[in-house]
Image 1: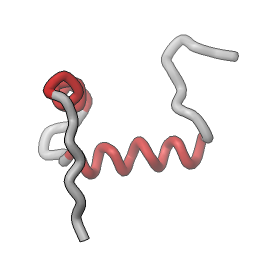
Image 2: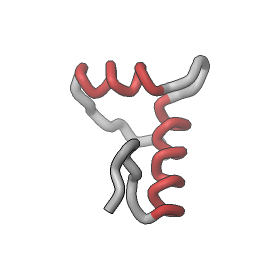
Image 3: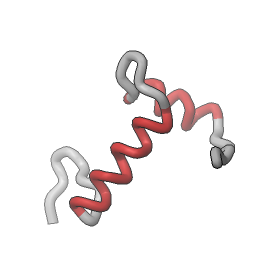
Image 4: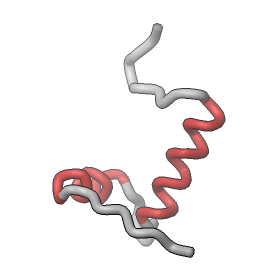
Amino acid sequence: MPHTIEISDDLRERLDEHTETDETYEEFIAELVSIYETEGTFLQEGYSE
């Protein structure tokens, strides 16, 4: 069953900057969750512990 998530206009604009042509928000978020589950954390460019 689909669920609705409310996000701010600013976040929507940020998502738009990162999604590929014809990629849905759901596909993009699923990819982020997959990366998080695989890596255990989100990596930032130029950041290392």
